[in-house]
Image (cartoon, rainbow, N blue to C red; front, top):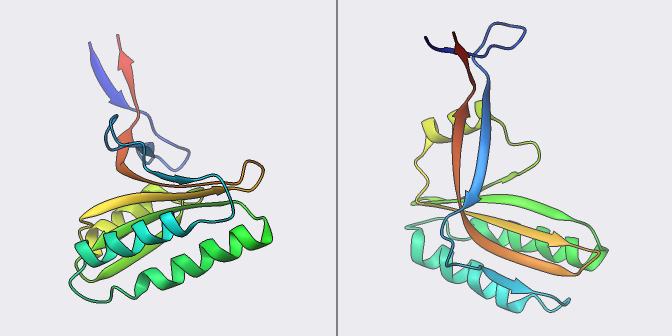
Amino acid sequence: MGFKPNKNKEGDVMETIKISTHSCYDKGTTSKTENISNVIDKLIRLTAKLTECYASDIIYDIDILNNAVTNGNGLDRLLFFRECGVTARETASFNANEYDTLLFNFAPIQVWRLTHNPSTMETKLIRVSVYKEYSFERQV
């Protein structure tokens, strides 16, 4: 009795990316109107606190957020804060291979999720944990 890894068609072990809130006590920073200044303020403060250089990387993400709110588009991005700046990825297209590449090239200090839902006008920034989960099947 034991476990063997599930494999896809190519014979690779099945890997999926899981995202969970970092803490059950942290509800994040939320805005329920077009005024998202509190979320932008939090982004700027986090970047200044966590990065040693290239803090201006966050300006691109703030611009993307402003455009999404102004144009009524949805947004769901992972922000990887590292010593030398911020790297962002779309949550929907983020996969195990991209995760490996990001970890190989730099070690993120913290990861945050930035979302905007145009139907509820909710914009949220919350710290998350990102990890890889492997799929195994039980052998009898």
